[in-house]
Length: 279
Image (tube, rainbow, N blue to C red):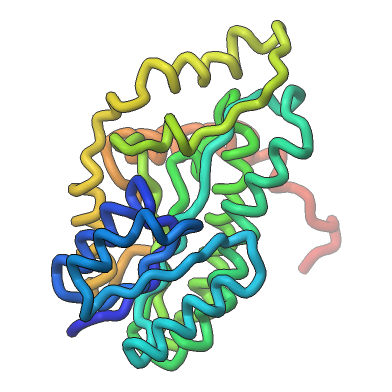
């Protein structure tokens, strides 16, 4: 079945790769970005099945207009992909509100408002999908990535709740959790705190070194990640959690192992918290 997609953040990275694959396989697409100039080539290649819309997820009204375009041009909406966002490096103490608040506006609140705008259209299409881009950083916190971790942890919790709400309506949610892929993420899509505190040279500042050493050298192939995402969207029973790549799977395994170890070590003490006169 031909699907109609709305994808945010199509100017680069996984969003661009996904948009190209969706269009190439014959589906209909509303491709969005903060500037539609970056999308003109895609629109010219697929004039009958691709529409472009300016969508800054932090601007009220942009998402609703993009959804309206999908409905007017293609008669509805089957798949929403919340991909827009960026990364941020800095110790918790180092970052200033004017640095980290925009991260939450884009990665979390923008995702929320785009989802809210699309849900009425998605509910009219049983079998539709919401794909929220999280990250391995949404599963395990690490020094230097705390604010980015916080936005992606929030996406995880929000998406799990959304999945619970939409399941009876026939709408499925997929949380894509990519590891490092060879995109512009560590370059143009990665901000950093201006302040440097020497006390964090051995912890949080290591993330800056990782960025510089790995930008453009990531092991992950975006085309392969997109192929897995398409397969999940097309599946009758898609996974709620979709780690992408060996690094993301490694994060899951470390998280679960540490979680189980903590629970087991303190279980006999921490479980005894009910009133003594409980039935």
